[in-house]
Image 1 (cartoon, rainbow, N blue to C red):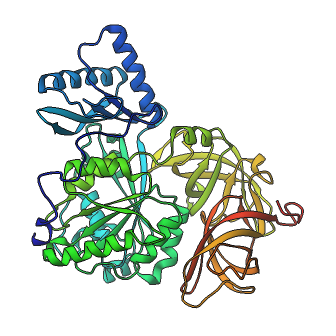
Image 2 (cartoon, rainbow, N blue to C red):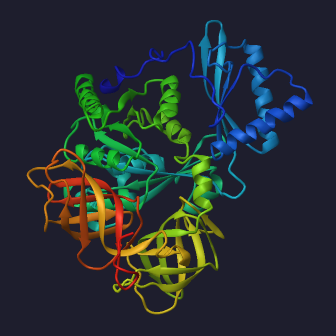
Image 3 (cartoon, one colour):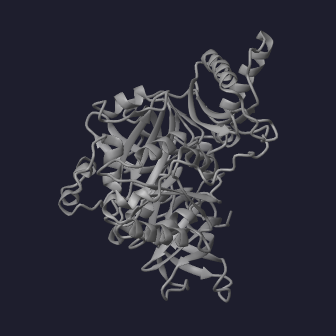
Length: 557
């Protein structure tokens, strides 16, 4: 453990013990100076206030006890703090919520407590967060997930990762080549639920109030196409960049970080294999990461988590995309996993309440990223609902076909994490059983849409304009006739460059017209996209669509 000893200490040297930012009306953070023996009317007011904060945090609220509204850490005596926490517990019990004390801080001779209150909304089974796992090959990504989700330590030779591999060649080579998903649950008290206590995913889901879905992506450059598809099609809320302490920033580390930054996915870093390295070698890896994270284009503030105080500070600052928490762990000794698990438990939903409500009020749009044919059931598709609420029995359209048309379909079954459900809400991943009219073969990139969205918000098109920026390039420059691979949502198809505008502005964004080479796709203005050509990569946003002639006119939208 030489590589870890210098990075963990008993005192929090960086946390400002004098004040916090002033309290704001919106959001899920509430400051309370004290909660001592409230009257019945005052208690009802406090419960209503907690209900509001839980709604703002989509089921989670953070209470700072002993803090004034201006953010000054006043603190309470031990007796007053215990009494205040009892009042908070009474409030949570009235709402059917759970309460977990995250940390206690000393402010002189007094205490300040940070408390997590959680209540799963009545129309949800659990709170759901998706985390994409990226990083170079041999960094220990699958092994890390094996230890987290199976609860068994690794033997130093990759034993913990064997249950995660989907193909024989992955077991033989030790390298992930496909996209796999693993789940980690947390109960109402913040304790881990994984396969060491339960036998299947259904039991984990039923026992958990919060579920972390890990999307394990390939690290080798040969499988970069698969990794890009995983990041664009599966819409992760967060990304976990895994780096080996013994190898440092090598391989696809830069490329994977570029991709998460381009897609605006908040990213934290986990340094594995620290038990193999000396303190000097681990320190060198940390320096490499700090240089990478603070480089132009990334502009993140590295924050090494050493204490519980660091953990809470990192969780609070993480979602604004300016901070990149760094965790040091060992898959063999499990050192550092306590901090990582607590951090995952504290990760909030990425969307605000207002954005979520706005999406749920729209018509349903479902992006297909997996297709199955199940005996006696028919076509079953997997993907993510990006807007609206989808229900059993809904009449939808599926497409586009090669000619740009759509066919009618009825949703006859819905499942989330293998558990049947009656409704799916915007932002949730699900599998859908469809009854189609006609023999149209559903494929990856197909969309299931509410009929009124066609030619109003979503358009079937072969050509589109996008404002693009270069991410990384060797010698390739976008030019007319160049063929690239376009990745937008669950769509991945080769396209040719029809026109490049502002070609003289090589270092700035440019507007480029792309044309799909095989068949039309269903897109909407505003979608973020990635493109690849050999070693050249870039990202952009769709700005204009040219609807397919059979679906609408040729005039741009």
